[in-house]
Length: 190
Image 1 (cartoon, rainbow, N blue to C red):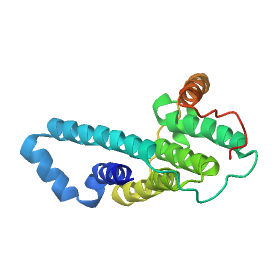
Image 2: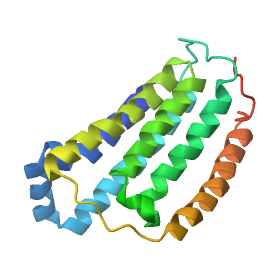
Image 3: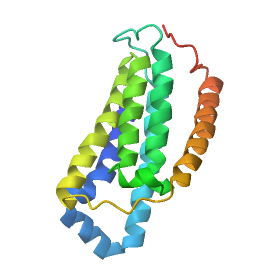
Image 4: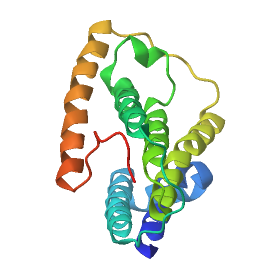
């Protein structure tokens, strides 16, 4: 579990540095250059992901609650919504002018979806922490940037393309879960 906690700490620190310590971030950028600074932060984030995954997979199973029967289907629906929401900002369609922070909303929905089907301590720590990170990050960004200036809506065709990409990504992710020994289509988990 220690790797999971260290990984989450690195994840939060790297993402929130510019918001919580803007002077320090500017000093780092000035000392080594913005490109090098972004490179270091990217390496820290990759290390964080590695530690999170390693810590989660290696954590002892400690049951905290039992997921409700049939809730796996709700998880799958929420995962489709999370993936779609996550991609809205990059798609540049009509919806990109309607949702501020779509990637962070996607992470929040992803966290909630996984808490519905995982009742063990490591899952609560990982999915709960990353799920909460989304709204906290949104709050910090909003405080820093102020009111949102909506972008011009793009072409609705981009939203439909995103929907197709999301369906493909969903089945790839489901296949990875299946290869790891977790069928995402059971509906009920014990």
